[in-house]
Image (tube, rainbow, N blue to C red):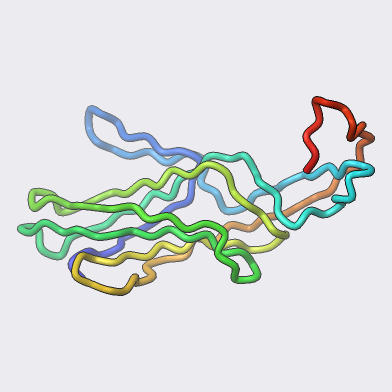
Length: 164
């Protein structure tokens, strides 16, 4: 491989300083605690899937083996549930110029689908130009814990309430 994976981190946010090109990672994610409130009369005490409104990023560092060539690749990010089901898959194209030895990729994602409590994994894979297969370079675990609070009474006929 022409491109070597150095590290990847799952975090809430990253910033790159324009003066010195240093990247800062904020809110590294290892675990999410979610509280769900079932609605009486909705028949959905435990929904099959829940969308969690959270913004997060997968930040990775890569190094080229040969600085004097351009390297093109596709980076694939996949979210895998505790049952092994792929809940999200997205691909990012990367091109590292011949003048650069290092490359950072940042995949910004909005929202996460949760099926049940357990360990979810973000799989990072790469396929270089000329290759037919993606190679897994790392998996980032995210533990999801779900708590249920007391049911709420809601009028399902209320025009301001959207039925699930």
